[in-house]
Amino acid sequence: MYTSQIDNDFAQCIKKGLGSSYQKRIDSKYFYDKGGSLLFEEICRQPEYYPWRIETSLLKQHSKEIVSMFDDNIVLIELGSGSSIKTRTLLHELQLIQPFVYYFPVDLSKEMLYKTTRDLHSKFSNLRVIGISSEYMEGISRANELIFSNPQIPYRKLIIFLGSSIGNFEPEDSISFLKQLRSKMDKKDNLVVGMDLRKDKFVLEAAYNDNKGVTAKFNLNLLTRINRELGGKFNHDLFAHHAFYNSNYERIEMHITSTKEQQVYVDRLSAAYAFQRGETIHTENSYKYSLEEIRGMAEKSQFILRTNFIDRKGWFSLAVFSPV
Image (cartoon, rainbow, N blue to C red; front, side, top):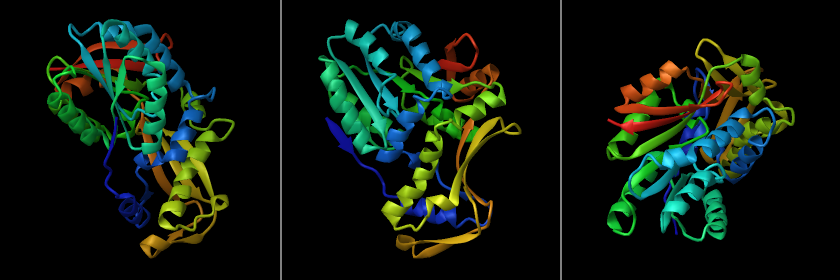
């Protein structure tokens, strides 16, 4: 089963973001068209990109424990599901103890959802995948509607938000986001959030500047998307990927840098955008957390930190939040 409904606001985001007189910006959610989603899967296979490997390992070690926190059958909802590779460990544990497993992957990319749904159905005989192509909150709302309208679907929820995607929010926005999530959860539901922890800046910067240049292609794919969908005239050879650790804010920043003074016309927007040499488009922040901050995030958003699974190096956290 597959449902889709996405507002077409890409053009407005580009118009506003490239027209800014202070700092040009593009929301990081627009990375994930079909090409961007495939590139991100390739990023996860790069040796420098530790978050994917460590989070996958933590899930393999602790999936049984996470599932056993419930005393009843549950549904699994994933925000930003992508290929659902990491999630299969949880699905495997659930299928061992439930007659049917309902999984609601929520992702912006319709193509990725279709591919993932087809693949999962071929691997799990007692799995029901209901893909929802939408942004996060709409996806949770639509999943809730389907759950409560069908008595065959368990109403207890395990929501997972992996890949340190919470780090893409500004700190105050992450609290607001978690509060909204809490409002859509029952007290017996659980939320699992992957969070990248603070560490040596050279490790962090290497993860976003892999030697094969896959992250650079992923970042510059935004220009490809503007060209394809909005009739942009961006020349990739005149822009470069730039990612660095900003210690003042404890975050990785990703930018697209203009290598020369130039103007770029975008047909659908009927506008030309001027770039100075060295001027950037800010495309992503990825905040890194301390353990104290994770506990504080839970408390500020009406959760308690039920448990926190951390790898031996102390590089990554898989936090379980339970509603208060």
